[in-house]
Length: 369
Ligand code: F6P
Image 1 (tube, rainbow, N blue to C red):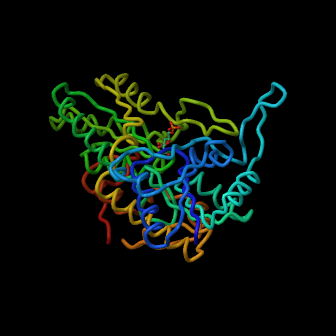
Image 2 (image 1 turned 120 degrees about the vertical axis):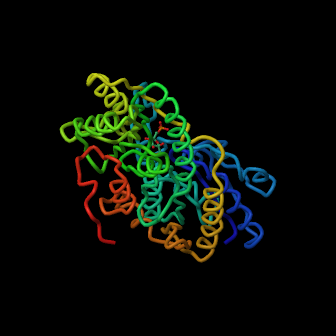
Image 3 (image 1 turned 45 degrees about the horizontal axis):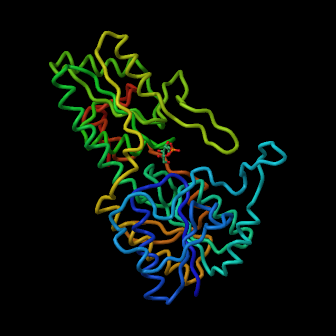
């Protein structure tokens, strides 16, 4: 392996720079490789200034930095790229140009740091001959085949701190505080942060809720003298009768943007005569310095991805399995997205300690381990 490319695609996640740093250091010091950064996701192969050399100097000091020094493109799907043709906006497939770009750069391997969308594209590019290796990135933790993605731990810490802060003001004002959290169709952030931050109600996409059940919990607490409640709500949560709430419609380029369920829940609580406030934590969950766990995981992923590339393990993704770095087919990682399971011990534990998922389930039911 002589020439290695690295790109970061999709929404950013804390730890991207740590992966880049570890990959560059390993590629140079162990394999004597030349490394190139592809800017702004797959788009870098199409842009005149889209390729940058990455040496030890370029990665110095980036370990604790959030974001990505390479830039990212959330909508950079080469199979559906919007361009102007004869004054009209049209969608075209430029995937062959990406493959040509990889060949022109004479890359022996391309590390693709991305979430499910970016990694699915990597798998499709492999079918056209691109020597891709995946690295699982996303705060949502929804990629199959790996115990955890980097970025998730940082998002959890930020969400937990937000819940802690909401607690004190909720208690002072006897209010229900709703915190809307990211995660798309996976409830891991709300579930784990809700557990760590002492939420009374956790609403996640995997467990459709009933509005009355939320109120039952809030009222039950009030009757016990706890006149405030904390709700951790996934942006993808939905009621049994309703649908997910979106703040923007999707099209062939843009995925629909989730957002607004926190407000819906907050308004319902207010209409029931209980004062409520809503906080949407938004991109604070993605920004800033990665936690120690994410830095370390990202570093291990970066070095392991280069070792995998050197062995020719293309169309595969590095993954965390039983606490060790392994590798799995990209198809396995992307074909079955990871979701919170009902028998997940975090769900069972939440029920055991009286947290409501808004589904009136048997919180006190005995569970066999
Ligand atoms: O996938 C990561 C994520 O932060 C989701 O949790 C969220 O729904 C989405 O990206 C937001 O995307 P954007 O940065 O385009 O607003």
